[in-house]
Image (cartoon, rainbow, N blue to C red):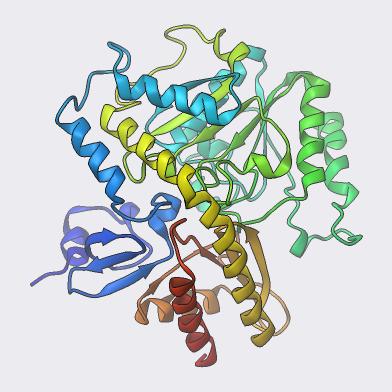
Length: 423
């Protein structure tokens, strides 16, 4: 009997390739069940989508109840309860002075955020960061700079995009003073504004408060606050891409809470609805009210079932899962530090909450992508699913569900220890 992978190859193009050849038939909690009956400890969580685990009972119940009422109404045609209730909830948990627009994916949300910033400021330019990932549409590919493969054969893209250096302090070329952010990261904006683009031509600076695809890189708080100040000084909108960092991933509802910085606009997707396609652009009310009908739109955004699932997801997060993510994140990071102290091939351990990573290096401390690939492959052979990231593909990320326990973390550490020991 052919596997799902073998069947897929016959009918789907290489562009739809996966990180593994796994075929799965169901998921529950922290585990996936494969087509041949094996249980896999899933520390990929559907790439940070299943933040409260697979098929959480409350999400399944909410979605099923909504299925029996209304599957699609068209948010540009009618109003319905789950849509309005979710928007109200997102306004409540995001600060209270915002408004919400729903789309389907993170890329769509980021497209919407860019369009909103351009519409309001009437300026052409966007500043993004090297190492960023914001999506694969033409617009979001234009502001993505983690892998040139995403841009190959698609140039030219959206014009007037400029890239700044993200403070990747583990590999910074600049002199470090403890945990302080090297001044070069702050001063680069002066150079950009002097040599490349006038600041009053910049509509927005878009950044991930913690870079995902770029390597799970946590910037210094002072840097994020400096970016906010730059935006304030020149009337530039600050956009946070919280597609991967949102909904409990970092031990907070949104990562922006760690930096004590409020963006003008921020985007969410992935974990918002525990696997149902949904995303949101959340922005200050004063800007959203100036975004008129027809300036943006879509057919499927804010699907009734997805919105119901999102409301259930947020309820689970608020009733203990976020708190657990913070607690388990501290425990997990400590266990990863134990491995770093034991194995020289782990150059760095970093992250916040359950958005954690280890950077794999060779004997000279250089990025080791081949070793990373082998560790991930060997871990899967031992029934632990992990993903890589980083511009050099040498970072292993750990995206455990927020419901994870010390038992599952210990199992993962035991598997990693075994794999590293046998290299």
